Structure formats: structure tokens, C-alpha cells
Image 1 (cartoon, one colour):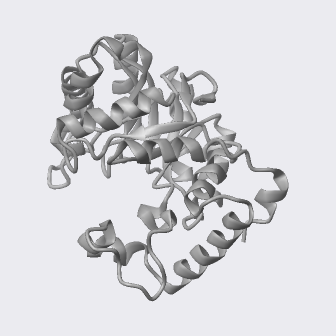
Image 2 (cartoon, rainbow, N blue to C red; image 1 turned 90 degrees about the vertical axis):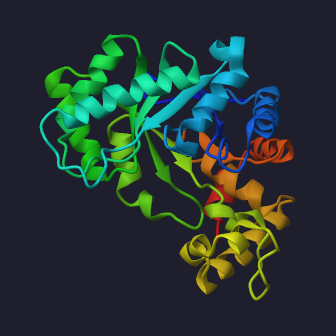
Length: 307
């Protein structure tokens, strides 16, 4: 599988990454192991997790399943913000980051985290405090690279300015929600990533499942599907406008011999700042489908014709 460097100085990531948020939540150990094995067998070397996934269980499962193959993959994990009901005091954010890192290292059974994300910006803690704490982890060898997630264009610019002024470790990438049904990030966040030499790692490429082709306008959600089980999720993405766009995209993909899922993934892979697309899976066959989708190398004409 193709690999791309995350930012100017980051690690090389497989263009398809495995989102491990299902581990310890929807999937227990053996089913998670089957998904992870399928990922490794099909060339995925980028594993994305977070301390909040399954209350840490996702990290534990990755650590248990990888064993001696730790050096074969790039592990990205994320620390959560301070509790919202906890008043900020100077040093509280740095303490949270240090403790979170130690916990992730222990659960992952590793001596370093390849890419460490700030999962969400802290509502009160200053960026400088976070960057100094993260830089200390890099200097200690516990973290190799740092990155941001769910931030604004302004926060991207500010973080890089603070890092440069203080000779601190710079963010090398940013994770954002980006799909053919959610393109708001293209106005400001993607350009900010470009001008700051950040690699972009999109998540929710299938718009929480709406771009799988599983759901049709005017039809009941398939029994047992995500939208059937999680009404708040369905309410967030399901609309007549989105269904109409899904129909247009489906026709576009089928005219070219592909599925809408393949279009959703291949389109993101074709975007210039994208390093790796995070794709989740609950079964090995889903992993294989996501990997196959990245093999469609869309032409400039295809990209310009997207409805």
C-alpha cells in the first residue's frame, strides 16, 4: 500500500489507517484481533486510537494483539481534555497530558507513542502550556511526534507560532472530520494545514455510514444498522439534501465501475494535503473493502466532475 509522510517531518503512514474506536466498545478481544490481523495482512501500518475509546480498552487490545510486531506499525493515540467541570489552574493541563501519556504507554505496552494527538483543544488551558508539556514528552522519548485534532484554522496558526517562538515541537498533522457530505473544512482548516506544513488525517470518511450505500431515501434503516440503533447519530447526518447527494454520488461512481464507498475513500486519498484516511471496521471484509477503495486513482477529470 502507498505510504505518505505526515507533515514535513513526521512518520510515513499507509494511506488507509485503521480506526480502532470499535475495539473494546463494539468488539471484544478476538473480534478486534481478527480486524487488526486483516489490516496488517492488507498493508495497513497506521493504527489510530485514543485513551477515551472503550475507556482505554482499545489501547489495551492493540497492545495485547501486536506483541512483537510493535515496530511494524505507527501507533497514533490521543489524550482527552481536562474534565469540563474542573476549574483550570496553572499546570493542570500539563499534568493531565503527562498522566494521560503514561497511561497510554502502559496500556499499549510500548515505550513510545509515534503520533500523540491533543484530541480536543482545552477550553481554558493555554495552548502554550499544552505545547510545552508535549515538547517535554518528545524530549524524553516517550512521544515521537505531536499533532492536533478538532481544531480551528486560527488554532492551527496559533499553535505553530507558539511552537516556533518557543523552539518547541511543532504539530506535524491534524485530524478533521471530512467527507463528500461534510466539506466545510475546505474553506479555512485545510488551507491552514497547508500553509503550516501539516498532514491532514480525515476521519468519518463515510459520513457515519451514509456513504456506504446501505441507506436509501424513503426506505427504513436496515434492522440492526448504526442508524437503526443510534437515532441521535441518524439525526445528525440524515437529511433529504444528503440523501439527494448520495444518489448523485452513487450514480457518478457506478458510471465508472465503482461503489459509493470506493468513491468516498478514493476522493479523500486524492486530496493534496491528505496523508492517511481513518477507516473503521467491525469485520475483516470491511477492512479489505476500505483498502481496495484506495486503489482507485481518481483522475483530475473525475475530481472536477464530482457532483
